[in-house]
Length: 155
Image (tube, rainbow, N blue to C red):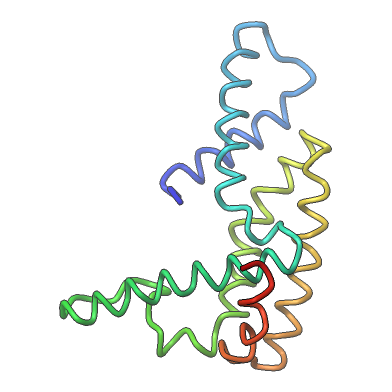
């Protein structure tokens, strides 16, 4: 996932939303390309917007990938990247997912759904998944309890 252009895409979405009633023809082509880039980026970060079983499957895969990176960084005696520490992460997955939804996904998907009504299903899933993660955060759920049954769901 390339997050380097995330803020640029989000700004373009908000600008497009603000000016959607009055684009010039020249601007319309450029804006259509910006919107296409924004939609591709949305697909790339869409995990919290998927149905719960699929969201959990991919959350586990992403977390495991991050932790494998952190394990390798530790082995190489270099600073462990943010969210890549297995020891720190095993008890904080719900909190991390809530932060990702609140600070990255919701601000990005909200204007996208206003521009493209087809995205409303994704935002509904996002809200349901946010509620799921809030409940799991309240329960202080550990990695092993979150994913013990999920591995077999989609494999």
